Image (cartoon, rainbow, N blue to C red; front, side, top):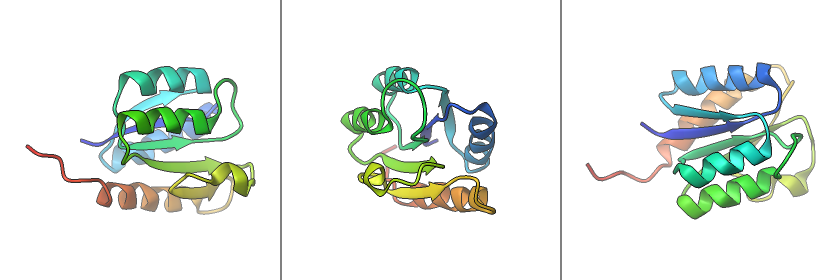
Length: 122
């Protein structure tokens, strides 16, 4: 089962993203701030990191860089209301939250990310 780290400081979004990830077949880990996400990403090997930009603690880019140390193939979904193309550099997917239908697009990104994961030997 692929693993996803979901970082968002707003619980309502964490819950919605977690629900979508569960439906897509991911084992989910959640963090409400960058420092917690950084700590989790040092302990676990993730296939996908889903992160907001506007949160306390470590920056989103630090979190996904740490995740890429564990797994260079990790896919990054940037799901944020902050529209800054510079911050999106390095992310595989970029989605602006609060747009109608964005959770449906997020579900598609989760499925697409799963399809891009390397085969794991059994």
